[in-house]
Length: 174
Image 1 (cartoon, helix red, strand yellow):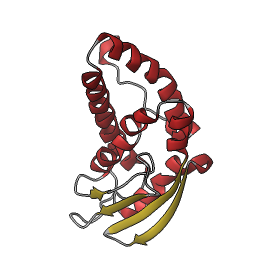
Image 2 (cartoon, rainbow, N blue to C red):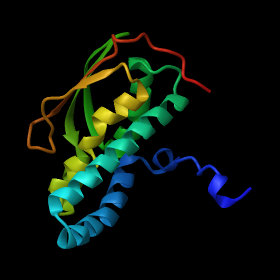
Image 3 (cartoon, rainbow, N blue to C red):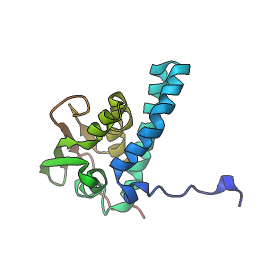
Image 4 (cartoon, rainbow, N blue to C red):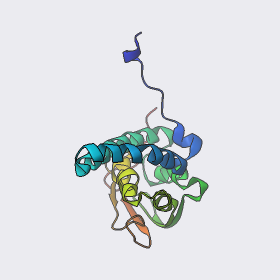
């Protein structure tokens, strides 16, 4: 078997270190790379390419999450929140949860705090918030996320409203 035909190792970094540490590590590497590319090429185009890449990665990660839970409905998705909330990275207030909905507000976001502390608040949306819609799409293609505000953009809270009514939860595929 040659190297090109081997499957890449599964990405288990998030489970090991949590999302906050992962995002900080990624940001510390990507920010200087993005700046160097922006100095050489059109900044808006560079950011668009990065954003598109991050969205596709999030969609893939959402699909991978279904392998770690019993279903891809609200209850299963709540199980995955442990990765994003580890180390008090997010303070979440669940507003509503049933078989078709999951509504919560993020009242503190250490991700936003971290991007600001690193001096790259404009990259927070590109590298973190930008993922949310694609992640749920990968996790459950029938689910829909509505979010009208984020702490990253200066709001008092982030309002996540997930609608899973387009499909009843299914058992995750092995």
